[in-house]
Image (tube, rainbow, N blue to C red; front, side, top):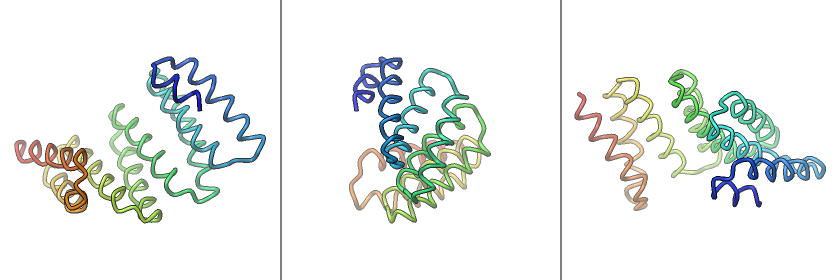
Length: 169
């Protein structure tokens, strides 16, 4: 999709233009999975623009479509991105709801790595809320899965969270 290329180059207007053209094609061909993916990409682009309301609307439409076809992986990805938007705006209650749904969808998708990554995100959320003991539980839970798989970035994120949580205890 050309939208991704323009997005990567920081040309968000062009990215949106191509995402919307692709969305129209997917709508005409009834490609619901493609529509859900494109709405997620559109939402990310609006989020980067700072247009939280349009991002939120696009995330919600993506969730609705992905739910229709039980695309658990796409649901997880969209809930992750939506949770990040809520974290950025300080809405920790909504972020937590998204991260719990993220985890549930990774369970349904049978993705151990996804479950572990969601645990690390729940650790980050609890850290931001000042619940350092709870954050540590999530970090260690995620680390338990990603460490044997040698997933360097996830291991690093878990250890950074653990370090920060212990520092603040």
